[in-house]
Image 1 (tube, rainbow, N blue to C red):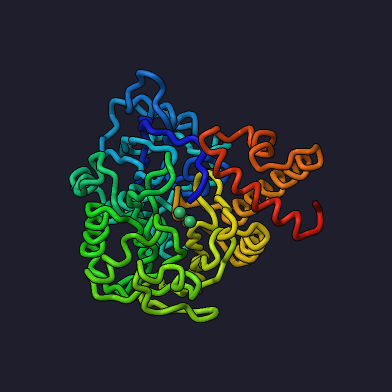
Image 2 (image 1 turned 90 degrees about the vertical axis):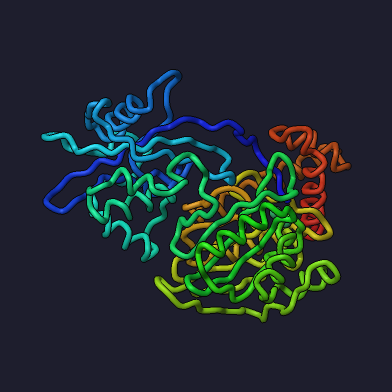
Length: 434
Ligand SMILES: [Zn+2]
Ligand SMILES: [Zn+2]
């Protein structure tokens, strides 16, 4: 459960260029998007951007290439290699045409805008190695293109278009890091949010985190992904008690004959509804074999819920945040289940880990993990300062404080904001500040 900011409901059209050259090995030109970028900040990608009104995709791709890296190509000569749509988890969704083009003779690519903080020519296999080693993050169309190009240019169009996701169907499983697979499923979460991200972690043997959906078609989607990936489920893990996280757990347990594990508090809260078989030990660790290998640690992170846990993959610095952090909006702290001071403490403990990326239950993956947590902490401190000011100005009820402080939040969300105000007031009282 969380408060959302505005969520774009329409797809925006975009175009990207995969530039290649032979030196004599085949190389492609890629960029790292600045971590400050709203969409896929910190991710490696190909140059590209949004179409202007009435602009043709090829013209857009050529224009973006010139604006971003200073290279001029003939739009008419670009080769169409597929169309990818951002999955449903994202607050911004794009429908992107990908084009392939040889690098123009005699021109040198360079970074031209603040949108990128790195750019280079790379052999597709080297790029994939760096991804497997956990050095970089990239989205499915980029990984797919590099895999196809690693086998050369023969039949490249056919090979790049060989999957349904290259024809405008959003991919159901999203692997931004090897073996950290996100599957967004529709859940009865707070509107306008509609989805929860389940995670499948590992290689041949996996842990499934938060099988969330109560809806048959969404459960089938997760089952299909698990079947297609042909992996053995070792266990199902739950981050916390909320129904938009646990509603597919019993189904998965029976369908695959596997056990469910959760924090003892969560197991107790879910007694009678979800069949939790086992509770997490203190500082539970699990090694999963394969390449690059996964080393999981379970951290108790109360604040949003008393039995909340985050799962940390140590090798790559990936944190499965549950509802500690969200890719969009802010987390609701709703007393007595929620507790603000404990929530601050959990955020600070997770920030102190060797973190590289956050994998939330709602919204997209965040590459700039530590900065993002700091933003959350700063945002809460600012809210708290303003709540304290409103209190000192004579406001007493959460509703009147919300009116004064949450001027950036739509009125429909004021009820939930009032719960967060209560949580902040509890913290201020505990600290003897009011
Ligand atoms: Zn949630
Ligand atoms: Zn929750």
